Image (cartoon, rainbow, N blue to C red):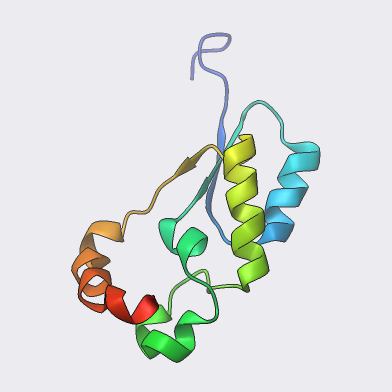
Length: 102
């Protein structure tokens, strides 16, 4: 690392709870970046009844309330971006089962 040229960064991966988002809203330093996965924005515990084991992931899906808080944190800039390394792998699974989520 080159002092004064590259600032140290902390990247918070796969936020899944409103509690995490609210903590960052209160105390997020400029050198922290945070992400949320598409799954944690779009799916919640209701998905377990609809798609069973396809809804199993880590971190776990949370309540619909957490979806709302995470969306608001993303819109407000508390969460910096949406990212997920497994999205391409599971895209076809979600696509083939998307109708059951409606």
